[in-house]
Structures are given as C-alpha cells and as structure tokens.
Amino acid sequence: MSQHLTKEYLTQLAAEFGTPLYVYHAEKIKEQYQKLTTAFNKSNTVFFYACKALTNINILKYICSLGANVDCSSINEVKLALHAGFPPERILYTSNGIAFSEIAEAKELGIIINIDSLSNLDKFGQQYGHSYPVGLRLRPNIMAGGNLKISTGHDKSKFGIPVDQIDEILALVKKHNLRISDLHIHTGSEIKDVEVFVKGIEVLFDIVPQFKELEFIDLGGGFKVPYKDGDVETDINLLAQKVGEAFAAHPNPGGRPLQVWFEPGKFLVSECGYFVTQVNVIKQTSAATFVSVDSGFNHLIRPMFYDAYHHIENISNPGGEKKKYSVVGNICETDTFAWDRTLNEVREGDYLVFRNAGAYGFEMSSNFNARYKPAEVLVIDGKAHLIRKRDEFKDLLRNQVEVI
Ligand SMILES: *Cc1c(COP(=O)(O)O)cnc(C)c1O
Image (cartoon, rainbow, N blue to C red; front, top):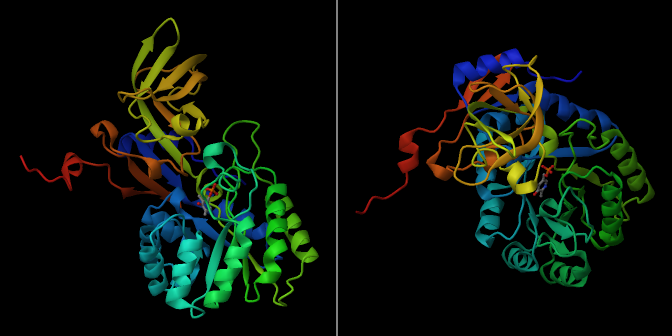
C-alpha cells in the first residue's frame, strides 16, 4: 500500500511550523527500501543510499535503522554518515575529482573507497599498495539518464575512468599490486529502462577476469520514480530478474560469487518529501495568471535547473474550480516552478504543495536573495518532529567577517 500524507495533515503542519516547509514521511522511505530488498531477496545484493539526495541527520539515522548502507560524494557526507551511526564498513565513498587528501582521510576512517581517476589510483597505490582494498569508478561510455545534466556514463562525461583506458588501469594495478575489490559504474539519473543496467553489466564483465580479488560489482543508482501521472517507476522486479540472469550467465572466473551493489538516492527519498509553500500574490496579466509563492529556486531548484516537473496541489481549496496558472517564486530572478498548470482555484494565502520534493530539494537550497532556508519536518509513526529549524537573521551573518 502506498503511503501518502493527507491535505488536511499537511495544512496542519504548515500552520504549526510555518512555510516554506519541507515535510518528509519516514514510512514512505521504508516502503521504497522494502521494494528493493523484496525484489532482490534471492540474490546477494546490498543497497547503499546515495545520501547527496537528502542528508538531514535524522534521515540518515532512519535509513541506517532500515539496514541500508550509505554512499557518499564528499568527505563531509562520510562524516555525517558516521555521526548518524553507520559503521565504516557500511559507508562507501564514491569519489569524483576529489583531492587525494580526502581519499587518505577516508582510508584512515576505514571507509570503502571508489577511485575515479588514474592519478588518484596511482597515489593510492604508492601509499597503500595491497594493504587496503579499493574500488574503481569506471566510465562505461553508455548514454543513459533523464537528461544530459544527469547523465554521467557517456563518452564525454567527466565521471569515472573510461573503460577504454583499461591498459593504463591494469598497469597501475600491477605496478602497486593493488587489491581491486569492486568495479563501479553510475550511468545517470532517472533511468527507466533496465536494459541500461544490463548493458553496464556486459561492459564490466568484459574486464572482470582481469581482477582476481574482485568481490563486488557496483551498478550505481539512477532508478526512476514517477513525477507526474502516467510516469513509470523503474521496474525493480524486472531489474532483479535481469541482473540475476546476467550474473548467472557470467560466473566469476575468480571463483567467488560477486555481490551486487546499488546506490539509489532519488528512489528512496523523492516521494517521501512534500514542499509546502504559501501564496503571497496573484497577478493577472495578458500572458498568464501568476501565482507567487513564498519560495523560489533558492529552495527548490529542480524545475529551473533540470526543467523538472513537480506535481503541485492547492491543498487549501481542493474542491475549487480548475484554472490555469503559472506558479512562480518571489526572488529577483526568473524562477518559474510551473507554466500553464491546472490547479484548483488559487487564492492569496492558500497553501500549495510540491510533491516528490524529498530528493535534491532542501539539499540544493541556498540563501540567494538573503532568504532563509526552509525548516524541515519528519513525520514518523504518525508524529511530526521539527528536524531543522528555519534560518534566522543571525544565520545570514554567521561566518561573515565584518572588517569595515
Ligand atoms: C547521485 C549518485 C547516485 C544516486 O543517483 P539517483 O539518481 O539519486 O539514484 C548514485 N551513485 C552516485 C555515484 C551518484 O553520484
């Protein structure tokens, strides 16, 4: 059964905590995680939550309690994960153009590491040789993902070591006697076609025989979730079946069965999130009826940055006549959330809710226009908890050094 928070409840939270407000529903995260573990229950598969989607410490603790592992994109995410209670062996640091000092720090902390450049692999080998296992982030040269900004595996992408540089990789492995424990690919976000993962497996299996100490194959994240009516979710059951078949067809020549890893971000936390805003102003023009809410791309950048569609609902007037609106923000920059969108009649003061706001919502927010970042609330077991206070004026000056 799918878990949703009701209009009445969201209205109550908006009144209690104020707007703009991010609300997360813990049980929805659990539902998504269980979809994954149920589909893959017959295979040796582990899920690492790609926490850059949403790093509130309570979300990390909750996901830790579900039994998932965690995938990090910076050393600070690694430290947040440790703070949340993940033991080092459940934390993966998939690097991307980072300074070697962060890799060294992660190693000291006992974190699992994926390296994405020949240069850092060489440095790693010089420092640690065979003493510490390490994974390779590879670029499979596959085009996939919802749009170019979120495609990471194609042949012009900066991410990973291109698989065509396998000779250079093997030379470094030999030179330093590296212990390569996993091969990683992440081809992009919003991948609905499971064949993309199968193609990735094929690319990896071509080179698997070269790595005698391999234990894991990491297929990255990028599972799609529905944003609008008619959208599909990546078919996780089909994915489990296809991955199972692909692995059955390629027994590891090294002998040991390989464990499969995935790194879902959006899949776990997108739908748990609701972004609640309030209407400041309604402006009639010849081009459109503009609805300005008390937010902007400073709080939810996905529509402007990725042309992303977020379903919007007027929870204050659910029975109102349907009309067309342009929903915009209140910052001094064009910040259209939705153009020509049908909503129940909107009045000033109404609450508008943006769905699918859990992933890359708060996490990509800023203080542009010296606006406060929103508060965050976590609903768990039917109880709402404030998990981040709204900024206050002093937060805008924090860290500024007044020299004049
Ligand atoms: C962002 C990212 C993910 C998660 O992507 P989603 O589309 O949110 O599932 C997984 N792995 C890596 C390495 C990433 O950078």
